Image (cartoon, rainbow, N blue to C red; front, side):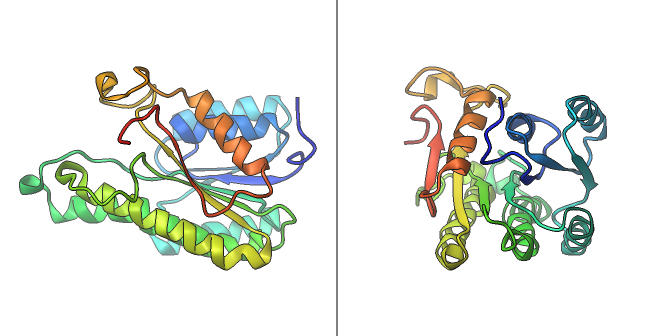
Length: 241
């Protein structure tokens, strides 16, 4: 059942071929959104999603790009501008994760995590905003990580922690700056999800992992709200509180 608020709106979800991105994509498609599906290497998973969306007669655009590369991001948005004219919703979901001891962390790995999480979010937001400002909805959702913003020593995920904390600061800054354009910018952070590796249930106060459907439901709720902006909402069952 679609909701008139989102029916016919255009949503771009980065890294939408699987996991959280896929769950959000399918949720927005069910609401009647036109879908811009971004992927990089997950071409097999992408084909099955596209087939499913087209069977449902959902207008779908497909783009592949390495979002760590600003030129590729710029090129992708030039194509989006030609095909979609405007953008209503941007979900910045792309971001690699790495658990590794600091004494074995390579500088290449450091840059990979920072670029895939922080710089990719900035590049997509930067190039998307001219299109989003044309919308009468205007929503940006950044995907974070439970405990983003906490100033605690977490040596084994240091570059990831730094990158996601940077995304949180970016979220709040864009929320403040774009309020005049009626664009709402929020960060939603998962903890341990059903598709996460590893699965440390003992570390989750509620004793269970998060569902992809539940996370997508939360994203949808925030997108539909006209009064939530600059917020950081955790979907984590108390993990990393």
